[in-house]
Structure formats: C-alpha cells, structure tokens
Image 1 (cartoon, one colour):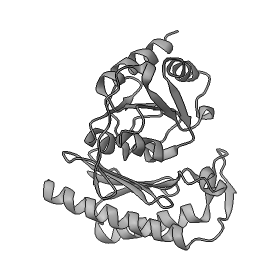
Image 2 (image 1 turned 135 degrees about the horizontal axis):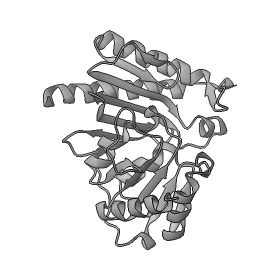
Image 3 (image 1 turned 60 degrees about the vertical axis):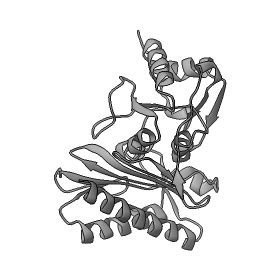
Length: 260
C-alpha cells in the first residue's frame, strides 16, 4: 500500500496547490446563507467542483464526499473527503485561519490528510505510517506536564450546545489558556507543538477527516468524546492532544463533565 499511499499523497498535494491558486485568483466572495445558517461562497463551490473533477478524472473508482456537493455515489473502498473552505466565516471576514481540507478514507478510516492555508502558506500533510510534514519538513507535538499548563483550542464556543457546554467548561477551568477561532489551523498548530489540546463539537466528516493522520503522525492522539478513533460516522464531538497522557486526562474530565 505504501506505493499507492505515496501516489495519493502527491495527488492530494496537487489538489491543494490548485485550491491555493484559486484562492489567490479570487475576488471579493459572493456570499449566501445556507438553511442551517452557515455561510457558503461562490469560491467554496468552485473549488469543490474543480477538485471533484480532478479526482474523478484520475480515480474514477474512488468515492467523493464534500461539504457543498454531498456524497457522490455509493460507498466505496476508497473515498476522498473535501472541505473547500474550512472557516468560511473567517474567510468572508478576512481572518487568515481558513483553509482547504482534503482527506482520503480507506474502508471508512482516514489514511491521508491535508490542511492547507492559502494566506499563511502553511500546509500539514499526514499519512498512515509516515511522519507528519509541516510545509518543508517534519513536525511533532510537544510534551505537556499537566493540564494546568496546557493551551486549549476550540473553534468557536457557539458550536457547543447546552449538552456539550459542560465538557468545554471543565477543560476551560483546568487549562492555562484558551485559543478560540482557529478553525483547521488549530489542529495544524497542535501537530506542530504550539498548543496542547483541541476540543470541538458540531463537526461533520469533512471538518475532521484530515486530522487523524496529521495529529497521529506528529505523535498526538485524536478521538471522539467516547475515546474511539475517528472514522466515517464519527462526530460531531472530537478531542485531540499532543501528549497522550494529557489526552487521557482530558478525556476523563470530558466524560466526567457529561455524566447526568
């Protein structure tokens, strides 16, 4: 599988290059509000449409699931997952934490993931059995002696409903500092050893599918709030840590906060 995986990584990076070029050529976005009150722009749709075309031309037997175009066809052994603009609201507002997410699932399990940030030109690439790369070189998570010294990220506290808020509140009280609004960048920074924990809720497959190969290939741990590995059908709650022991501590705290 290594030969195939290397080929798929190279292809996924070519997709990320194309997406980045489309960001660079874009003018002011045309914005619409979807029925779920999330934003979508013409660029979201154009990037996903182009990436779908590229995948279908190269790998017609592979499946595709995307935020804007849904699930193309029946379940496949190999399925690409696309989020053309992760962080559409920051993109509209001009906050440069948005990016393109690309993942490949093998039998529903993420084996390849890319986070690509067009403004900062950061790119994290993870693949099963390989060390995670950040831009030109390898990256690694950092050790963290205790939750009390940890930096925690969460994409947006508004994503946590009433049932989820106790878990976020527990980790907020236990950690040294909190970073909000980082979108996909937060998970790349965790893989690079800049932060220690990440917790999120209300996520869909395309929001989290690239993260397991990236976080795990850098030495970290990422699961759902039950401690199960992320795969097709996981979500909407995820928890990641750079230090495996801090993940165990945080998971115990999250599960304790969720008890009735």
